Length: 592
Image (cartoon, rainbow, N blue to C red; front, side, top):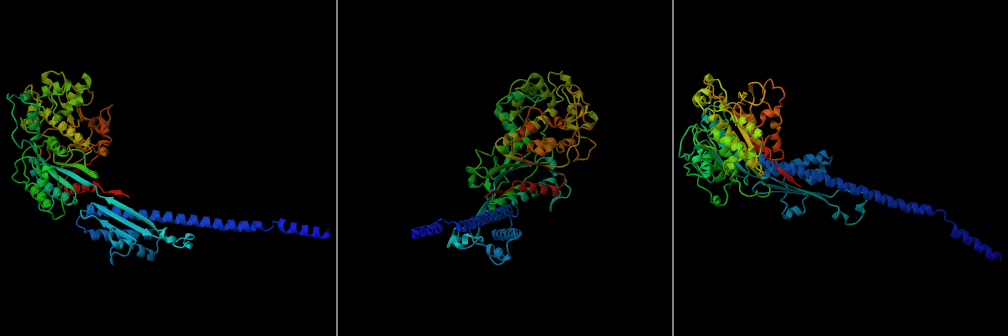
């Protein structure tokens, strides 16, 4: 009996005592915790390495793409070397050891990385591809980071290798250069580029520099504008002002469009200076530039160098020809662009029939009532036609036509002693049609603005370059102006006068009109910060009022549409820099 109790007691002590089990559990848990901590550290290291490599290849791809665009004379091997150098510099900033840097991105002085589709890329940590046409850069970089826990697992390094890749795609440009060929372009220019003395030569030099910066896959066309390159269709009855009612809509459009022409690669007239047309003209008005020594580039330069001056400055006609060269939707990754260059403001010859309307009475009727016809160059009447009668009276006043006013008030007040030539018709003593030329001048502004906005509604970016001084003058108001402001206050059309005692080049009619050029480009920065304004400002009016054109969408209404730049320059060096600035603004896009 005592034996049985002894055995039972021992069994209870042996199997019932749990002291020390916690140590076993704690030891097992500690191993698991250490494993989890190690796994977390390793995962964090993998994530950090991935992020670092992605940052490095993104920066390198973007830099390589920009070098291809902005330094077109560099070879692809030179670009690859610069990309590797940038990788090495960024890895050093991330505290990678020199040994690790040399392993991942060997010094390009010794060797360049293989292309990514080569067999050598299978064993190389870095590979770089650059397309032959310089449009695309591909880069890939891989690394196996040091691990603290996972490396105890045999063969795990095959699954913990971190890689990153990036692609920089240089946006293809479809560019129309729209160049001013008016007579004023023969004037001298300060600080001309090499071999030049006048504005025309400087413009040719700057245009050729821009073409040099275009990539092989970019496409271009040259359009020029002046006035009456070919003879206008004349109305059956000629009066002063011209009776335009004798012309059909198509004839008026022809008179408007013949102030501009396509020069190359697919001229729309019988050209004696255009190089032979490429075969692609049957399908596209643009031609691909090709490499820097291509025959196409040389043809562009030969054409530009052969351009000559012709007449006045119908900017709207140039934009009309340019925007109609873009057909259908743009191809993927393509930016359509118009670059307008001029040294003045819109003007057409006195008595010429350029533009949809020529008389104050017809403009009066069209704006107050209905569109005069369906030609798209009459768009400004569509902008005015749905307003109230009082609002439309204001539109006419802003255009220089006093709505419902007596005939003797249809003029813009000037001191007749400051006028000469055809502008003298703007003084009251010249009779009932004295406002005709000023109205035509303002309508040419409207043509150009709405041609540019028609392009922008289709996603086309418009850049404007104005050569010469900004017109600092305000425009005289009318005796019947609806605003109780000073008689001399600002209008966005600014001054059309020409002083007979002013040196050539300082004539108001030919100075750059800032509000006009900024609105053409939809340069929102300049539109929001008007500079040429009345001083002092009339009481009760904001600065934005004085930059508002009638019958067209203005700055606030153009927000969200493609924004370009207006660049004003005063000399030859500035003109070259302006075209380079625009080339840089059409930037590289990164896809990763």
